[in-house]
Image (cartoon, rainbow, N blue to C red; front, side):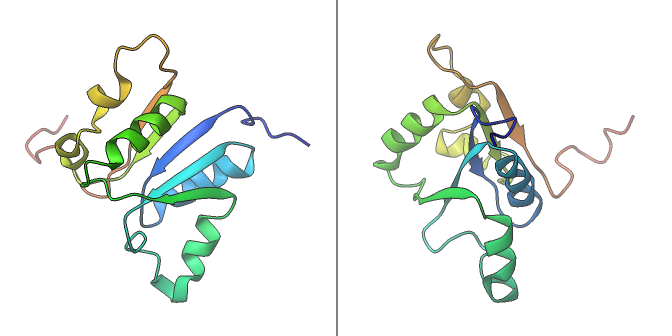
Length: 132
């Protein structure tokens, strides 16, 4: 039985629990999820003896990529070029400094098929004075 997201490729650059859990659900309904982790795995991997990480990262493919290394750029560009969805959970500005912010990832290439770019945040990323 095919899932409803069978033709969707998701690049998962999240960590901790909310992002991996979200992409786990998408993988369970057919999405092809590729989790990108730093050398040594994401910082949550060791929690609960690795059990939580095993659960929320099931049904995903994974790659270990050091985003700070220049050689990673070509690999990431290829992965991003094939992705329909890009999820990240870095601190504000971190991916921009590495060259993977929204503007760099979305690009203007007509062949690029990225449909959605998600930023997950655990903390407030707007000033407390900016209340509605």
